[in-house]
Structure formats: C-alpha cells, structure tokens
Image (tube, rainbow, N blue to C red; front, side, top):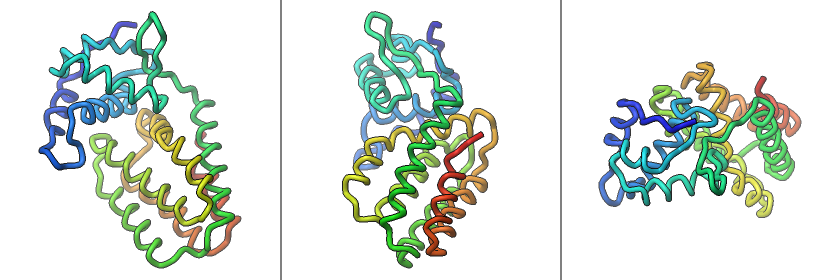
Length: 226
C-alpha cells in the first residue's frame, strides 16, 4: 500500500510542536517521531501503510534523514517494521497481539507487587494520584501523546516502588510497547480522559489497601482488554 500524505491537521500539529531550545523536545527528529507515533495510534497511518521516506519528508517539510532517523527509532519500539528491499511499514497488531502484550505487563507489574512495600508510602500515593489527575485534564484524541507519557510515568512510578533492579530493567526494556495498548482505546473511541484517569486510580486504590492479591487482580483487569 502506498504512503499517503499527512492530513492538514497533522501538518498543523507538527508546526505547533516545534519547540524552543532547552525544552523537552529539542530536535526535529524528536518531533517527527512523536507525530508519526501519534498518527499511528490514532489510525491516520493505518496498519500495513507503507511509510515512504520521500513522501513523508515532503509532507512534513523536513529532510529524508530526519524522517529516516525517526522511523528507525519507531522500529525499535515495534510500532513500525523494516523489511529489507521493501521499506518501512506500519506494523499490524491483532487483538490477540495487544492482549498478549497486556498479559506481559500485567505479569511483570504483578510480580513487582510481590516485592513492593504495601500500602505505598504517602509520597508515592501523592505522586501517582497527581499523575492520574493530570490525565483527567487532557483532551482526546488531541492530547494522546501526553496521555501516553503520563501512562508511562504512572506505571514506571509504580514499578519503582519495588527493589528488584532486573525486574525494573525488564519492564523498561518493554516500556515502549505501552503505546500499543492505546491503539484499541483510541481507534475504537472508547477512551476519554476521565475514563483513563479513573482506570489508573483503581490501581492506586488497590495498592493503598495493602492487599497484594487485590492489586494483582486490578493490574490484570487494567491490562486485559476484550
């Protein structure tokens, strides 16, 4: 399937995200990577889409080198895949694939729960609650990038409450796949900002009960998507 140009809203998004030096996003590569990821999650760049560097570079008014580096980064996250002699394609994730990824995260975070001090310290509770409430203030789908970041922050903070270094490293090595969990939420129109905040607060409330089995069950329900 041939690559299609980005929509006008997507080009506007790129222009709006151009950031001054010293801010969180400092390079065009960062911004192009974020934009392409966002369009994949929202379905503008649908599964199986051939991502032609020249077309993307022209549509986004950046160099081919910038697009190539952004696609290389996205390939490392699993959202796109490179086939020698064929090019780069938006990766297709079946419902089964997404469910399996959810099972992996539920298993890792559930295992971490066995080593964490529960209930969580007050400082961790305050931090996690603040992250969840920041989700509530987002506008979806426009702020899906911010939602993905807050989602990573929440689960990363939860993982950091246990002392097993290798367990945390295993989670971090797969962290980029958390974005895949947003695919059905965004594409099926079932995700509101308030809903996402509430889903994460359920995890926090379970953690604050001090009951490990309750938190493990909450994690499974959080990640297992029908």
